[in-house]
Image (cartoon, rainbow, N blue to C red; front, side, top):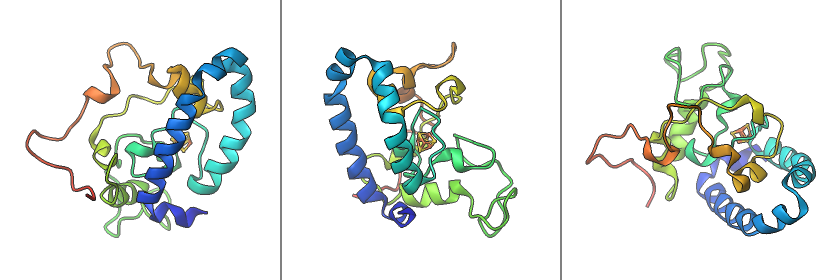
Length: 170
Ligand code: SF4
């Protein structure tokens, strides 16, 4: 199913529908108990996202902001772009046979129409306490939006200079 990653526009619309559906289910999650729902959701989420994205279950999914490419598959787990060790051929300095995931993320983000420009948002450090939990449930509870003291809301930080448009698909 990894081939799907080279169809980021399709994945983006799948992400949009999943997000809509899961948010709709929020009140039901609360009735059942978020911890219980988390236990039910973990495995299906892991299976489906591992098959598609090699998901590492960080519990704080940012796929739509990273060209539908999982940043946790970077050997250094970087969430804000490449490390500076990218080889001239665009491959990783740690795993020379592997294309840098940030090169792929950038290329894919330009094919996305809705969330492509989110690539320019600065992501806070990953919250390791959420590791292994369901990012879908954390999205509903808002746990994935908790940021360390000193950070401001995710949607308010961007590194794109004013007047410059990100080259996303229309
Ligand atoms: S960002 Fe986290 S939850 Fe999303 S695919 Fe990667 S490891 Fe999985």
